[in-house]
Image (cartoon, rainbow, N blue to C red; front, side):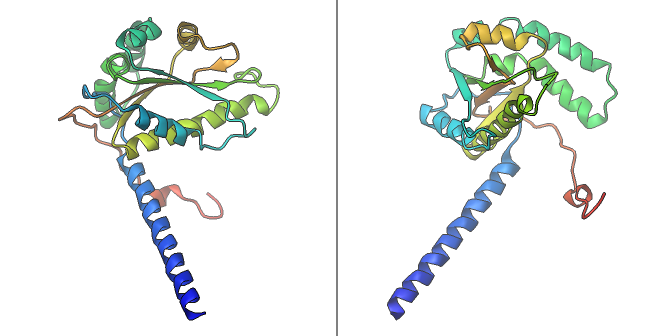
Length: 228
């Protein structure tokens, strides 16, 4: 009887330690997650991509169906074909941002990011195009379920970003503007009813890249107990 209890206590402690280790791994991934726009010429193994997308599919969804699909582009010609006129749109986006009032950190970040909006996608070596099933009009929803798909896919995308960080990868995200996503959806053969919320460029960070300085956020100042 004593031996059985001793074994049970040891097993419970091992499980507790494993949970603590898992928690530390998660928080480390959160800390390591950074946007990367300069990628090394190193192929991301297929099994790593599968693990990352599997993590995305663990995200919560309202209907339990996880109606998400991923087009993974590895071939340079396929990526170029899918992107089409993104280069021109990226240039117009940069011009639009030029007139905004920005602080110094924002200005440095945009100065680094905007010229790379096309290059980070075309040269990543692994461009992931997530799609989700949209029910109803997203911009003029007639019912709550018209918004659920959009909300859920961003939970999926966040899982992908954190999983990429845990794998030692960088990821750059770009949101398509205007009808841009429809052009890309047509190029890759996405069926009607599916919407592409963003591009995800995935890869190993290039050596010697520098990251723009981040705004330091004190979480205590963001937390309001009982009321604001």
